[in-house]
Image (cartoon, rainbow, N blue to C red; front, side):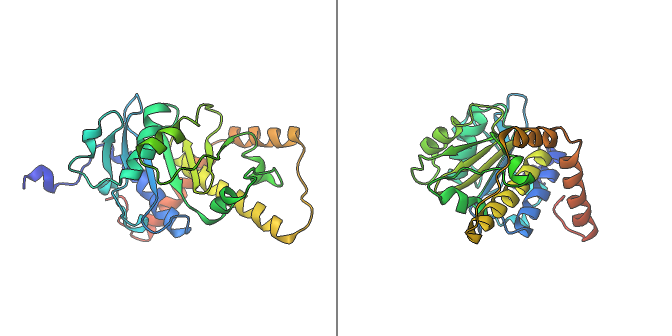
Length: 250
């Protein structure tokens, strides 16, 4: 084995560190599902080359150097790496067809998946977190099995409106996209919180207090314009990991 094969891949190291931190915190918040979910991050200008977690590696163990680099336009990039074929199908499709999706995070988190399992998977703006996503998600109601290449292509084409950065994947889970790891993880975190609020509100059996459309849109825009919350959120999480002596950045 050559020296280069023994040495961890250090290309795009800052991106790797951010993504590894997101994996660690997703596991800590129990938003993952065993070893079945995937995150990816584009690392070239066209958005077609991307970092992704190795096949069936637990999020709580992923380090920056563990991430594999794939090319959405080259099926040979699957050769010689431990890549999940469903992750390739889903994330390859997104990075091939959605240049605005620099980062993509797919999970089967409990409350988002409950929402995705309802006959009506809309998320009404019943609080500030829910209002964040007003008119900013798409619902996929065409689930057709595991996300191999054809299914991944179909899902990717639903992200045709750059304003809509959440896909509620009917009978499946959720896909979040964004420009950076920080932005995408922040959106993932708040979508799960919003879904939990809505599901718990439904469980009361009481009428919902739904915000007027104009207030919901105003709130969503204000949150989008709020400065640096996503950057500071991720920076704080990395600081906690660093203080704990985590090896995520190695």
